[in-house]
Image (cartoon, protein in one colour):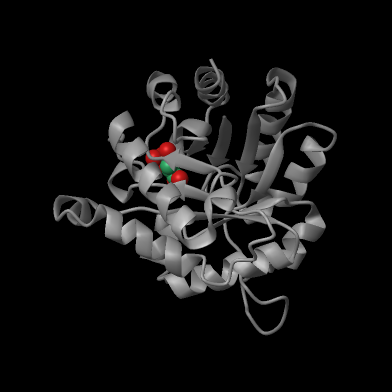
Length: 247
Ligand code: PEP
């Protein structure tokens, strides 16, 4: 199982460095497991330095889709790659709701990230209102289709299913709800890109994953890993989720 830690706008460089040094000392990863840290952009360089020579992966929470130019405040995939990042999140629900990112922006970012030699992780998920109206499947399918519009099929990409109502709320999707949504996404990948490609795309679940619910969720056949927000900020809970997910 993959355990990806989305730190959002948390941890100063000093705090991030101390955490990562502890993580290095305390984490053991088998060959079929993956741990990836997504710190804030300002902590990326030190993350690469501290994690160098380990099997712990790391990446960025966001980037712009242009290589360079007059885009104040942005970072390009090329710059992130030069630092050593291997992955980049795209379309996290906070980016969509707070920073007005559209599916079309996501599509450009996915292609640009792949073009720079990194792996994009496209995040999709419905709001509570959409779920209650029975729109979950159509919403996540549309986000997938439009977000992967320009994807380079010969290159790797990942998905994360993150129901908006479960992010940072303490409300977790039931294992059955999560598995059902993942199956919808997998079937859509199969319909659009064919079964052999669809099988290779990891789909992570995110939304209030904790040590207490990780094992049961991880048993679901369609879940390939977790994208963890709040519970990834404490070393102990991240380590516990990693061990529960892989038990
Ligand atoms: C996230 O931000 O991607 C997330 C899943 O957050 P949390 O685990 O805190 O719900």
